[in-house]
Length: 335
Image (cartoon, rainbow, N blue to C red; front, side, top):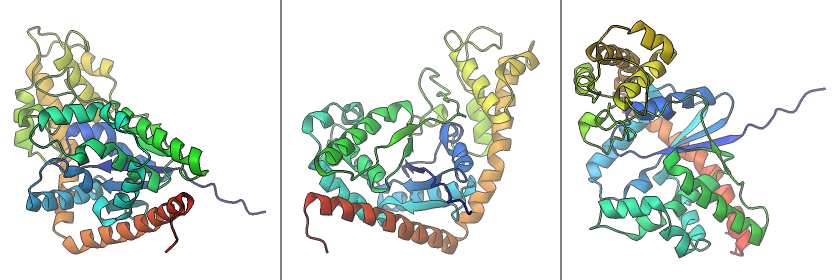
């Protein structure tokens, strides 16, 4: 008797096209995405609608969006196995966002820490989109009936509000949405800023604080040479007292798959310059093939267009199914 194939759980992940992803993004999340494609039903969204809560330069936003698509392909994501798409190409995101806005309370939004942080950074542009950003994020997830959402520590609050909104709608109208869970990668290192290792590496920081996936070998070596360490000379893993050195060891361990204990043993008697040089070369070696594939994809605009058009069609079919189900349950006349 033929067995019915087991339905895969669905994962949705979004990444904004604002600047090139960092080495921290790659180690902590992006390199693991390739490992998911056989086990899960994966959708990867270039979250361009989210970017305009902050003013963007139009030509730059377009260029960075295409670059991010090429980069997702360059890290190995197979468009035959994953759905890769631009958020703005699936209008159901904006439609669902309006619907869910009407099931979300002002008090819930005003408690969101990211709204407070971004309002402080962009005091001249505290717009409604910035306030209701988490509702659009909830729409992104719920439209695809995602079972799992990869989240970092700074996104857990957004996932919780998404779950609250979904449960509220389900409570009123029955089984409309899948309640998503957080997906926490089994493999991953929290990469810290090279200049302030108490904070995570971020592409919004000054350039010397992070390694970009597309940095040249010379830029990578220069940034590591300038990385903050401490006044001691001993190479040992001690995040509390030696955050800079510990960050470099964590990066090296993540890139080489060598345990930190083995790395510290191999560096016994060596100085911080040796450690920085070793991490730099491991980074250059890891990123070189990605950068080569990225350049190939960027030179084939027709292929990139075929990928995002197909992705929008696939994502649109899934999104429309959920949107129509939701609107029918609420009481709208079917088209």
